[in-house]
Amino acid sequence: MIERIPFLNRGPLVSVIRLSGSIGSGARKSLNDESMGSSIDKAFSRGKPAAVALVINSPGGSPVQSALIAARIRRLAEEKEVPVHAFIEDVAASGGYWLATAADDIWVDNGSIVGSIGVISAGFGAPVLLARQGVERRVHTSAHSKSMLDPFLPEKEEDVERLRSILDQMHATFVDHVKERRGDKLTEKQDLFTGEFWLGRRAVELGLVDGVAHMTTKLRELYGEDVRTKTYGRKRGLLQRFSMDLAGEAMAAVEERADYARFGL
Image 1 (cartoon, rainbow, N blue to C red):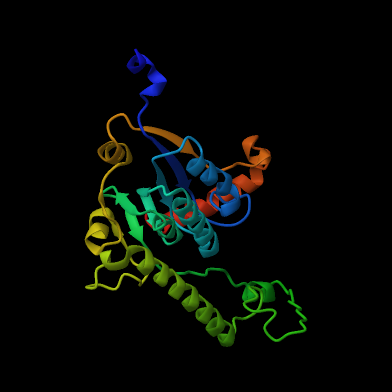
Image 2: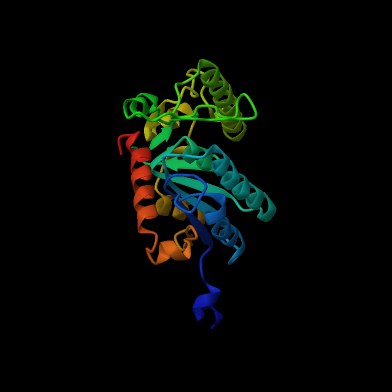
């Protein structure tokens, strides 16, 4: 008689965390530790999950926010002793790949874009435009480097060298993180840290990911045909939920579109 009671025969639960969009601080960005923290915490604690699955579709963004989200996932995985599986959809590049490495294993589609292990800084310069309009930029500082890389002043080589040093340090941190998480799975036959990116099948060969598989099929293979899933997403602010910050949302959409366009998406 007990066998007929449905809730006593439910299959294992896997919490699914969707990590979609560009990574960065502020309400306009889709992914950051503030917007995702509550959902990630709930995914590991509610319903005693047998595992947590990360569904990733991100072109990257802030290295700090990427590290914070990934660190939160690893901390909870170790505290709760819950395995974590990552499933990459269109892209997990740069910070998006950093998120994927928070998992114990990474799965892709053949067409998924993976990699871009590097750091980028982009901006603009408009000193000539201002000069043509008769506008003079006036900056006064108490320290020599306080106005570094001012977009309205001619670029200084010393500023560029200082920025390159910072980018190199951040890149080294990224490389160390990937090597720590992927270990001897990574190929030694090719430099994986040039910023290049690859499609899914090639990423498997390079050891950046573990294989080609989709979430539903892989979870059934790992946890049985009766496996259940519950999805958790990012926390949206009140203005976003009611579309009251239209200008901000439009700007965020343009920025995110540019991030994806770097990978032909």
